[in-house]
Image 1 (cartoon, rainbow, N blue to C red):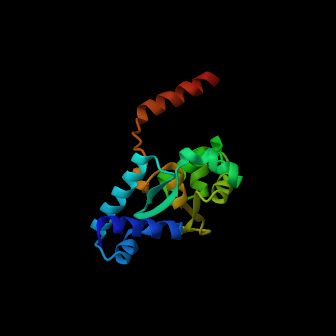
Image 2: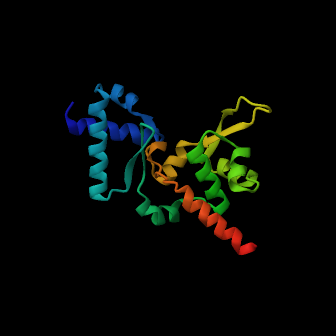
Image 3: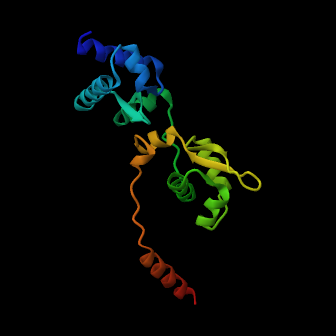
Length: 186
């Protein structure tokens, strides 16, 4: 097959399936190795971006999916009555960031960090399919362990959890800021 034929075949696969497809499966279907297949997909994705096409290819955990280009959301929503992405409240963002960086993590661990109950934010994040149960901790009561989903990665535009921004903790500054805050109330 010519490159153009391979691109068209991949495009058809991603369009028809409409969900994330593993690179390995795409490679098998077009009779190519994964390295070649990935190169073809990235080239196709680059073409879509350059041409500002109505769709794009996104990568999530070594899978690829075709989706609509967000720049055309306004027009699509007029026809489909599509709602904007669910907005995330401050408590939800705090909870989600803890889960993302500490996963797998229990509700108790989240609440220890936040200092408040996290049941509602966790339930909403699960409803939005941004977090999910990832099993149970081997301890008394076997509490549920939470982690992020592929939907989380897509929502924030990450290819994998490794793409999360690195956090540099300066504990001395944090301690000083905390003491300054405490001094305000004393």
